[in-house]
Image (tube, rainbow, N blue to C red; front, side):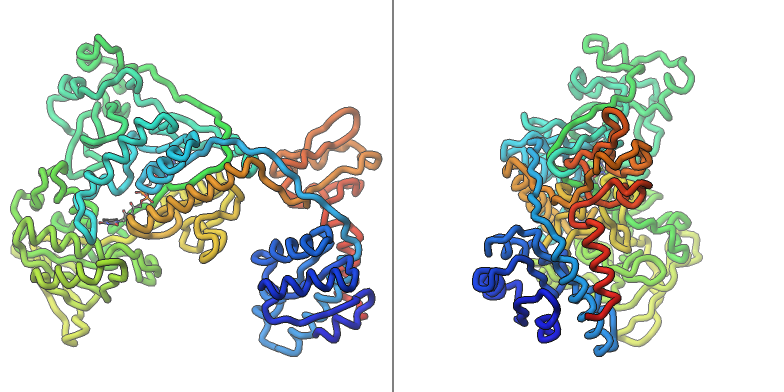
Length: 631
Ligand SMILES: Cc1cc2nc3c(=O)[nH]c(=O)nc-3n(C[C@H](O)[C@H](O)[C@H](O)COP(=O)(O)OP(=O)(O)OC[C@H]3O[C@@H](n4cnc5c(N)ncnc54)[C@H](O)[C@@H]3O)c2cc1C
């Protein structure tokens, strides 16, 4: 290959080096530029996605313009996609020959520099978003934290304890939530969603829509007297925070530690909204403050930010999708998140684990991997279910003294102090049965008991265990609107639907959109320590970007050859980045800052008067000829 490349017209020197991207490899390039007076460089190696930047820098340090360089992708375009080695080697020769012909047309280019907006947007106010917002705000950046629900806190706010240390979730989360509200560098918008994102790295223009709460946030002091005064004498509406296990009134606060401490009015159930005939006792008790406003409207705000951190989290797998587990059919089959609410002192039973008929369960079966590691639902492991199942087994035993059976495929406890926690729970007397539960059905004596049937793969026999209560350890899934959010922010999704990282090892919090980072379970299932580690990393990346003050943009933009442009305007509506406008008479104008170099306008221009840096006609035609015509 090297001999072949060395014999191509115009090639002064060809080298092979196993680790060309390493420092000695780059030094070889620099030295050859100096020794041989080279004016164009081609590297035929692995993915440009990983190393094009490295080699451009090496070329620049050798004294050449970095765009006098071209990289051939022998990995994804050749070695990885062919099994016939001889044919792949021939293809490699074709690709190198084409690159050598192309690179001679390269012209010197300079990256564009644009200044950066200093503010940051964080989307999602779970632990990931809260932690990222606080890190950024503590570093002096102004943060807009946009949360869809009436309160921040996310899933963590619903837990009682957290594994493996059994810290009280509220005790560690609430101070962070209140710190967000109190921070002078954070603007918190709850009941809000991002509607539109325009612009580019360093300069995003984001439109946010705030839904009405019907209570003025600046005036409400969270005295909760309006809830007492509401004409609904009893709470009748299923309470979403308690997953329907408790009830609330139409005017409510999601949970006692909610941030902001501001009530919400639910127009779906409020009599005033439904009939206009309510006595409005809530307004009466708030007469001094006038915080209740039935006429509040949706608010649209547009903000300019330099970076965005996405922290939109996850959804719990819907257990009703596995009908033979009887969720929604048998009253004593619960999801793990429901049991989190039952064990919680601020939950619907005040922390007592009670069945729907008010009895304490004497036997409980916990079913692992519901909607995870299963070819009919999700093949991936949800990473936290084994550990939260152990936590719930411990808490149920502690609170009820019940006999607890844990049905598992295998227990995954790979984190710090996780194995020790598993041993502790086993020593407490939880009975572990290795086997996937195949069926759950009523015991038949009318007392609400159900039988869990599973093949015990250690004993090699089918077990049928009657229990009072079943806990389904449901997996973590992407949010239902993850695909829409992905499109809004122009980022990628993995095959499971979680947001896709730019590189799984080297850029795990970066997305494919420059300036947009992600943290927490929107990227994939993970526990709270990993979520917090990731939100710190995302915040650090956003800080590094903003503190640089300017951002360098690739010069691979399109430009109009003015004299040739007929002013037909074909290109203007086609540009996905709204980078083209029509100025003066008969001329398209491309804003190079907005242009991402996608090439749509170049291909569409009927008069061929739009050209693109690094994709000039000469470069492309000579490359094609090089491919087709052997030297
Ligand atoms: C039953 C159960 C028990 C668990 N127990 C533990 C435990 O004991 N210890 C542990 O370490 N981990 C535990 N976990 C895992 C833990 O829940 C996650 O690690 C953690 O909640 C991830 O936080 P997050 O901020 O990424 O996501 P979330 O908690 O889901 O927060 C995301 C936030 O973003 C908001 N949001 C979503 N979409 C939008 C949008 N488009 N615009 C604006 N806002 C939006 C949501 O309303 C939410 O507030 C448990 C998980 C489950 C299911």
